[in-house]
Length: 392
Image (cartoon, rainbow, N blue to C red; front, side, top):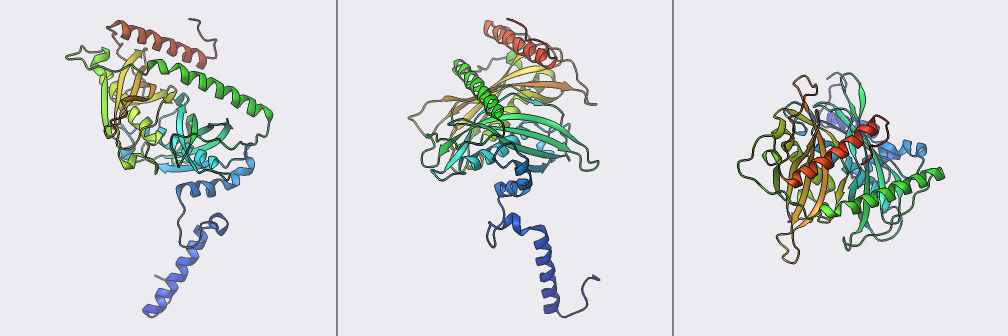
């Protein structure tokens, strides 16, 4: 009230307009938004560009990092206030999609969009809670002829205390699809490495993930069958399915589903399986490699199925399968779109780890999957402890 002297309505409005323009100028540096043009607002990708321009010179690669931030709200979390793992995975994928699509269109040529092909194992190092701010940073670390490796870090910030902690590290692989024909994979512009070792290490990671993707295809015919009146602690007792019609809000502008949307739904189903099994508060501990076998198009009906495969004393492994049914296209049959293993832990009201009820496998297939899950569990336990992996 004391900032402006008394004046007529016209004079007061003019002065308020001048103040608004000056404040707008402070909030929008000309150097950052000069290429947006007049009367335009920055998109998500442009905000990433502006917020990380200063970090470009510090990067070992000639690609601009992407940094986003979002406060966690009640609809992002479970009833105990812990943020869903699927919410975090969705934010990770969004950052990866922005930076990989930007890079793949960095040179003159056919325009494309980057589609998610694989997510390497992702550990949830620390839980995130409602009210905290998630900072997601993505950077391109390797390119092959037809794929892009993106590494993502997630930090949580308590804005009341200023405390920050690392919650996730993830590696994602994208392929560029032509806008004219989304079934056509284009070539990726190369990046410039500051050290030759970076390229050699990236090539090893590329070859390893390529081999791992091929090894998952044998499971593509496996399905989850419902069982009437199952016994407690059995696979059938907790297995769950979710049916979802893919709508426009789930898809890119080019008509196929965002990878992050699929991962979020997969985590929801895995969480239901875990909660049914132990009947306590549960949180995502880790996600094994997520393989995207094929694109899911708008109008498909997808079935996300989850079943318990293995339990240790304090963790449980859940296999999640995504099947797509193109109901509006009679020429295409139902197909396996994605698959992954999720690991959950059970928590008390105080946030302490609780024992997990032991799974009771009944059929030969369930016993086989239990032993396979046990092998994965022992390998990861040995890796965390820095010991040699157990021999089969």
